[in-house]
Image: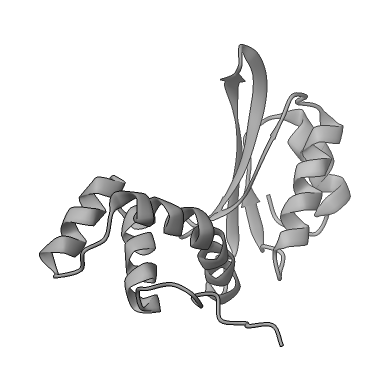
Length: 155
C-alpha cells in the first residue's frame, strides 16, 4: 500500500515543519533567520533543511489554504500593470476582492480584448461564485470582455 502521510520519513514532527514553512512565507525572514528562531526554541535544524521543506510543502499548504479560505468578497477590483521580463514588455493582470485577498493573476504579452477575455475566463473558472460588483479602469478591452463573460454584474 502507498503511504499517504506526506511527512513520512522526516525526522521532525509535522508541526515543526509546517511552522517553519509558515514563518518563511508569512514574514520576510531568511532561511537562516528561521534556523535561529527554531534553535532559540530548542530545535536544531539547518537552514538548508528549512529551504527543502519550503520547496516541498509550500505548494500543498497554498492549495489547502485556497480551498479553506471561505467566502470571497462581493466586490472585485481588476487592474493591469506593465512589467518587463527579460527586456520584453508583458502585462500583469490581477484581481483582488474587497478584503484584499488576491483572486488570480495572469501574465501575458497582449493587452487587447482576447487577452482580457482569457483573464476573465481564468478568473471565473477558479472561483466558486461570481461577484456582485467589479471595479475596473477605463481600459476598453475590460469592458468588452465584461460584456461577454459577466453581463449581469454591476460595474
